[in-house]
Amino acid sequence: MNILWIIPFCLFFSDIILTVNNKWVIDINHIVSRLLSIIACLAIFRCTTIYFTEKKSKADIIHNNQLLKLQVSDLNNRLQDIDRNKESLSILRHDMRHRLYLIKTMLDEGNYHEINNIIDNIDNNLKETKIISFCKNPIIDASLSAYIEKAIEKDIKVITKIDIPCELNIDTTDLAVVILNLMENALHASLKQNSKEDKIIEISSKYSNKTLAFRIKNRFDGKVTFGKDNLPVTSSLGHGVGMRSVNAFTKKYNSSLSCTYENGWFSTILFINNC
Image 1 (cartoon, helix red, strand yellow):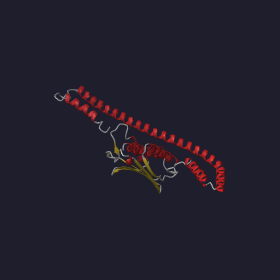
Image 2 (spheres, helix red, strand yellow):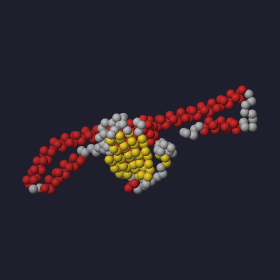
Image 3 (cartoon, helix red, strand yellow):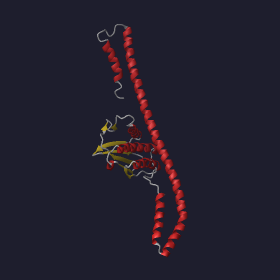
Image 4 (cartoon, helix red, strand yellow):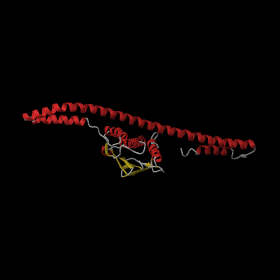
């Protein structure tokens, strides 16, 4: 969109070329005609700029809404999991007295093999009620869970070490959308890797003195091009929306964003102060 200014100038100079052997201005009518041509060219440029700006804004809104829907959906799923696990734990507690009685009976009889089977059964039931949590913040946890589960389903290894508290001084939903965008980019890049060993995503964060540092890195053996703002750029239609959303977040919260590509690792680090 930065080169759209060429359109009015091309139209204007094409008019000049057509009349280069004639007098440019013969009378007042020609002056008015030239001025109207210039105004028309500038109007075309302005309308085209507005059109593409609105189109980009709509794409950003649609993309973020899709991420929010995913976030809400995963929150609902996790709430349902909690309800199911509560029910399972309730049944497990109810049956525990009977299981302990069976264990005591087996001990008296010296039937240690059956005792092991009962204990294994209890252990399996407890594992089924376990809810995996990635951080203390429920909104961020749900967002992380959504894409980590997606990645695991696609045989992508995910390593996490995340420290994000329950309470933050920023809109948690905004941060969740940013994390979803970054994870979506990492997921798409990982899916392009040919080797299973290279399908890996590392997510880490540290919270200290009201400053949050969030990093996500993934293997990528393709070509990465950076723009003037040191952010990755792409010419593919429909891509790049996520990074624009992240960039908008950094401006809103006066935070910093750093992207690097070294030794086959693409890394994004987000620093948020006063959060």
